[in-house]
Amino acid sequence: MKIGVLSGGGDAPGINAVIRAVVRKGIQNYGYEIVGIKDGWRGILEADFSRLDLKSVSGILHRGGSILGTSRTNPFKREKGPEKIIENAKKAGIEAVVVIGGDDTLRVAYKMGEYGLKCVGVPKTIDNDLWGTDYTFGFHTAVAIATEALDRLHTTAEAHHRVMILEVMGRYTGWIALEAGIAGGADAILIPEKPFDIEEVCEFIKRRQERGRNFSIIVVAEGAKPKGGKEIVYSESVDEFGHIRFGGVGYFLGKEIEKCLGIETRVVVLGHLQRGGSPTAFDRVLATRYGIAAIDLVHRRKFGRMVALQGNKIVSVPLKDVVGKRKNVDLELYEIASVFFG
Image (cartoon, rainbow, N blue to C red; front, side):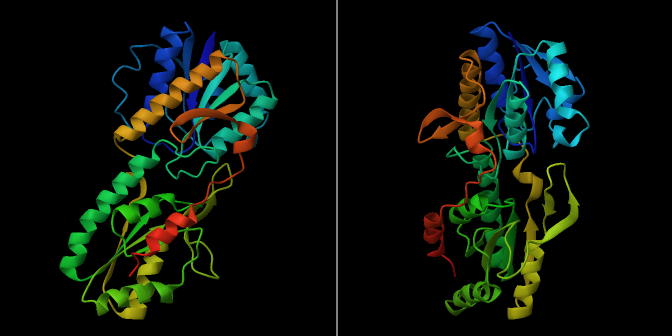
């Protein structure tokens, strides 16, 4: 049996650990031939394949990025895209595909199942907003990177008596902002799920000043927006899945705070540093477990499903129940964080 594997959407630390696990167990335990599909769905559209063997996945466990590359290609935006995928898969002898991706990539996998392509999904997004799984790999690494940044910002903020704003990823959900903010001792955390009031944010800063604390740390998710306002966008252009490019809310917030309080404010946009570099031990283990579970589903011919972590168990859930849904921040956890605001 010949199995394809692809990674689509934004990169996340741990993709290579998934690929390694799929290849190792697929070859050693099941005798499958594993084919790497380059650059997400684009690779199968263009028949860009490479053979994966034990040697090709040796030494990649700790590496960030994806040895297969990735892209935000949407086959349903291309003329006869789905038909080309089916045709190229058939020509290459690919009988099933392990699809590593977030909602957009997995939505394509689900739709392609209706065309006859057998797919198993692996949840991948540093935003941790996929429904059906407690955690996606890459999220833990992103939180660790953001937390380290906050630790470093504390010292310079205190030395210069400034407000420091850290803008992190989180287009529609604030999981990274929330968990990094709690771990990093942020004085305010702003997330997409709760539009913020600039006057309230300024009150948090004033409260600290009254206690003799002459600096503040604020974490804001890129998709956070002011009450009654819209998200701040970096560019009006959209990708093939219709997503606009967010960014700039940190600078907006910084200007408003300076206007309100007259206190010096600096902004750090963490950006793609959250995606890059080696995955944490947690993400390496989780990604490995996902890869093993995915190739096991293929062997059991349970297609149209996504592997998931629920509690401490790896389970599988139907793709049709996952796509189009979003796992928002647990507001109980946000209430815990709010105890430490100001």
